[in-house]
Structure formats: structure tokens, C-alpha cells
Image (cartoon, rainbow, N blue to C red):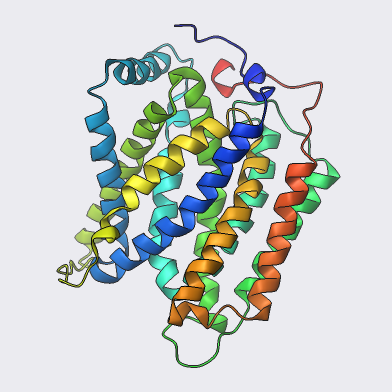
Length: 338
């Protein structure tokens, strides 16, 4: 199985399917956020995140019964031993774990829409730097004015939406109470751009996005278990019993995470990280606003100010997608070859 084809050839491939994959990722994230948010209200934020990642790891481990998938995972291990991949390039799951943890913490407080806009802001700025540093499998992307302005619009959208005030006693955080959870999510969103870039590099070795997802879920689950052990040692991680009213679908966040990570690992081998991050905005925001509109508590935050923030982030995503160009001169294509 060849493993030394230039990653730049993958980036030059037709972009229709990668863009569709990015759109599906955007649709999955708000649904997963709502599901993990419901689970966290029952068992707590960190246990919910660990359950989500751990269940995904179990499903993917069962899929290792496939010889082809085992060979793909073995190829990643071989690349680590031969230093084609560096150890830190397989740690993308750490960013994913922290994003899921921020989901379970923030969504019950600020709603799906505010969560998504905060993720978008963090991703947008981070993706610019990730593309410029060449952490992903594609060529280095210069900080062209159009890319910077698109990311700036997304950040402005975050600022507008995050400072919105809801009305009434809804049980959802409003005003100043939004700031801390939003800042946490912005930071987690920034780490996901690094995650997507690293997962793209791993996929150039594994040649199987599902194998990359297994590596991602392994490192993410270990991260959450370690954090949980540390917090438990301080006595500040109370375990709550699961109530009988918890719906069955509250346990499906891990499966949704598999879909997201596998499709993202595929898409980022063909798209710059910034383009992937901002194209997902369209479906993220559409589905997120729809979910919040169905929840009486979160609906209170869907005022004009939040919708203006959504619109700014949406314009940023369309701008980045339409302005997409491949520079003729590129730095070394894959970080794993450096």
C-alpha cells in the first residue's frame, strides 16, 4: 500500500464531495451538542463527555474486526515508529475531547446557537494560523486579506451573539453570565482546528478516515479519563444517578462523533482547514437555530442580536468558500514528511 504520495495531490482533487462532507459535519455538530447537553444535565458535564467519547471508542474498536481497518491502524503505528508521524500528530483527539466537554458544560447554559457561534469564532482564528503554519496535510496558506476578513467577520459574529441578553427567567444564562461559558467554547473551538489538521495528516497515512477516528477517540477518551481521575481526587466530581426520564437518544452522542470525525478527516485532506471550518458554519447555524427554536428555554436567546451574529458568521463562511484558491507555490505538503 503506497504511503508516500504527495498530499498536495489530494488537495487538488475535485472539492464537491469534501464540501458536502463538511456540510454534513456542520449538521451533525449541533445535534450532538443537544444530545450531549441533555446527558450532562443528568450525569454531569465531565461524565457525559467521557461517556460520549468512550461509547464512540467502543463502537470503533468493534469495527477493528475488519482486517482492512486493522491494517490502516497498523500503518499509523508504523509511521510513528519510523517517525514519519511525530507523536504529537496523533493527539488530535485531545482537542475533540475538550470540545465535547465544553458542549456538555455550555449548551445547557447558553443554548445550541450561542455555542455554535462561539465554536465558529474560535475555529476561524485558529484555522488561519493552522493553515499558515502548515499543520494540515495541504499546502501552506498565506494570510491573504480575504481569508483574514472572513475570519474577522466570524469573530464579530461571536462578539455580537455572545453579548446578547435574553428575556425573562428562562433557566438559560444571559448577559454577563454568558461570557465564561462562551470563552471556554471559543478556546475549545480553536483547538478543534488543530484537531482537524492533525487528523488530516494521520489520514494521509492510514488511508482510512475511520481508522483516523479510532486514533482520535482513543486519545480523546484517555484525556477525559485522566481529567476525570484528577477531578475525582479533589472530591469535586459528584456522580449522579441516571433518572428514568433520560431519553434513549441521549446515549447516541458518541456515534454522532464518529460520523463527524471520520467525515472531517476525509474533508480536510482536500480542503484548507479554514475553508472546512467556515463551510460547516452554514449547516451548523441552520440546524442550531432550528433546535433552539424548539426548546422553550433556549428560544429566549434567539433575539435579533443573536440572529445578527449568526448572519455575520454565515456571510464569513460563504465568503471563505467562494474565495478558495490553491496557491501555486506551496510549502512541504504534509507535516509528517518534515
